[in-house]
Length: 249
Ligand SMILES: [Zn+2]
Image (cartoon, rainbow, N blue to C red):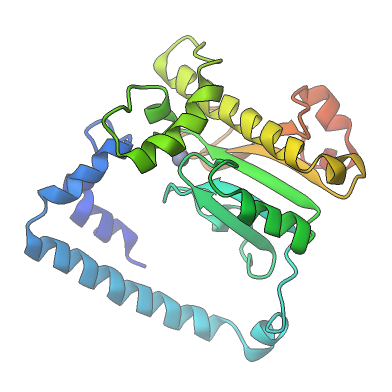
């Protein structure tokens, strides 16, 4: 997909000056002339069909036949809807492997039934809660979001509870990142309470992670970082857990 051209085309109206998309930036779409909106949509639809044709060509029939009768993913993943995080960052063949639930701020509270489906019905041995740096939902939850709609406020309310506990940090970026991490901890905690039996019996491991699109951890743009495993946040202890030994140095 010719993404760069597309982003340039829509950029002026959809991204705030700092480069940090906020929930409030949804108003940016109103800045488009109707003809521009239609042109953006047309280009996107064209690109989607072009990409899909390429995708179809790159897979053979056997690929699809291997999972046509049912899905057997190994991971249930709760991620943020933010378009800058995509599953391709974790798995180049996520089909039949990652059961994905996404919402603003990677919350457990908004979609408990979907998460439960992944754990109880699909029996994934892993549940990943994936936050990300520069998360607009977290920033909104750390700010005054009283002017957002009722639906958005309800989702942000569940985030702000956890974030209020961690407004520490030396500068705004650090505070923001701490808010992201704090929310991941809270979501892991909620999930652990829900799936206590599976975790205790060893059938399920809940992993809290942060995808770092902005290099805020100074480990490289696009890195992923484990911050919580089944409620454990001590990296020395996490490192000793057999399934993480090869990925944490
Ligand atoms: Zn986000």
